[in-house]
Length: 415
Image (cartoon, rainbow, N blue to C red; front, side):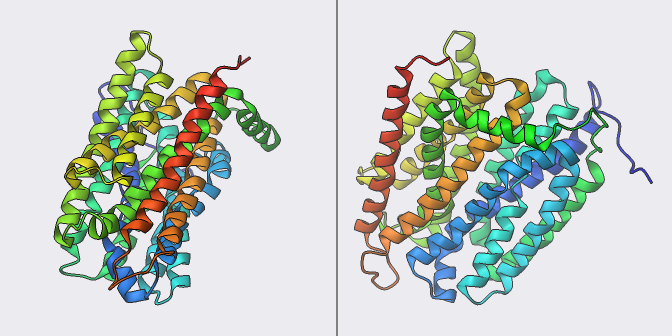
């Protein structure tokens, strides 16, 4: 029996448009909430599970390696089965992972749960982008994609003060039971609300799709910008998703009640960054300034902000985290710059390829920072500021090398 499909939305069909946008926006909201929540509950995880900084970094970064490993096959699945089926199915894994996380009493158990979560939310952004291309007019895509990214910012915001408030009534295990129920509810909403993908021509053969992926990685433009994008975004994700909270406690000496408030301001700055920098890039492009130039300029400023964190520039931590949240979003402009450089037929593989690199790097960076911090003595549950400085310096050095590579590679003629 053929499933009921709502009519294709168009001009004036606001109800149908919202029925497509809201489920995918909720999915990305959930994805970002899962990504960032450990920054707030980290002290509870350390106390209840008895884990050290390296293990905490490994636990939290498992989300990223599970997320990254799914990106290439995800592009194939989206093309073959459509965003509705793929996202609703994968979100069941996210809900299952949240339950495993909630009931586990060992590091192994919560790592398995975290991996399920990362895999389960891996389609939340790419499925949305593909669905919007299928169902919305091309002229509205920039606007709708911007609102989609803002939904992720709201998820990051929800993972801060609201989570800290919720922990006064339930513990972190109860929180993850609630997130499991939310995952299943959003999966159901996507399945029941989003239209079925229309029947089109025979999907591209798997061998051809894989050949396209190889072409992306061999492209000189991709190789030029990918290292800087991956290291910039991974540094942003690793700090925002875990180490910002402990850094505020151990280095900036911020009381726990204030940490969630500062992280909330950083999340608000992230929302503003996605909207403002996207708008700025569009306006500058009309004046002859490429999106790539805007992206690299923003990532250069982001490196400067990270240097301020690393070398303890005497500014209020709220200001530093707001600057971090705002300029950290600049790396996402590289996705647009890359898709403009490739044929539309390769656009999906371009975005999933750079996404894979970003999340592999995020896994390595988040774990490495914890491993470096663990080289210093832990005193009364507090990590040594020198460990943070060493870990952040290592990442900062890699980003500067990637920036240098971008400029050096740009001196060569590209075909």
